[in-house]
Image (cartoon, rainbow, N blue to C red; front, side):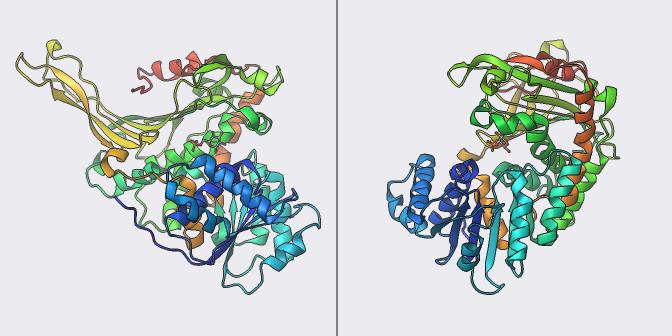
Length: 491
Ligand code: BG6
């Protein structure tokens, strides 16, 4: 099946931090894919900007390597790659000093009609100086817009400071705060599933749903990112943004339309309805873990502290939380969230666990009745599975078995799953903010996270150790099992 491509308007994309990890692993390959698909107009340009000195050709060679390393599928792509590289140029710009800014201004002539996108893929302490500089050079007017990468702050106060600084240069409707989980195909499918089918909505509440699980498990460790990661930890790095955004999409009321503010208003209400977890509750309702040496990705791996080179760090590489949404729809339905590095397998999924049937007409010989589950698999093997009870086929009496109604997208559509950044970058060019976080959402998420961080800081407890290649600390299993439930672990 061929995906439909709608070309976007001409644009200049200026990537600050162009020689960094995000640009190399995600942005350049994503832009190339969109070019290959025919979505970029002839005069779309990408300007890399970083402090490092580099010529245009050196930047093109950097981009060629970045794309080559991520896409070796199609032998006929060489011409497309040359065409894409010709769009690239490079400027050495020092975010905190004078150097390079007049060159950037010169590279962006003309008035406000042309779409200019500034991508802040830098260390967060450079967001404010870059925005200030762009404003003072008169480069923030007209159709100019800015993409802000996470982390947006490390707590509520610092997030407000970042938001204030960006807002002094750009109005909210031209600020695109990226959470790349919102660009994942299956995450968008969650909206289709909920709001394009009449089947689920009548069941989507505490009368029929027993609990929800959201898992984002990674096999990777922190590796070269240890410096950043140690100042963040799993709660800030993954839960404050990705996990809470997924929770919002599961829990929000039907928005009146797909308009950006209609969706974001509903997500905000969910964030504001999260029951606060602070003090003693934080120690009861959350579990922190830190990986030790073990086996992962086919070999022996070091523990976090050795990777970091600091044996005193108490940064968590795993977190599990039992959250509650205090509103009419979700009263008493726990949302169990967990994420961690160096776990047994890479899997991200949302599991909606339905309530058991109210009365069983079957006897023990039919086998246990397992409540229905809707499993939305974000990665890998994107798809949706609805687990149902059926009669075991054939004679021999009534025996029941649990099987899934299975829709694996790769099989169903036989099409490439685009990377989240492809979709999100094109949405910025189109000016569509539906899949981007509004300021108040980011701040509401921090308001809920801060008391957990405070309680952890005040406690003497260290994160619970877990061996690399396992499913995390046993306390995370206990967190759900003491409620009589289990984490969903399937093939
Ligand atoms: C990033 C986190 O936001 O998401 C990383 O900073 C994490 O620590 C990554 O590895 C996971 O993204 P994905 O798309 O690979 O699930």
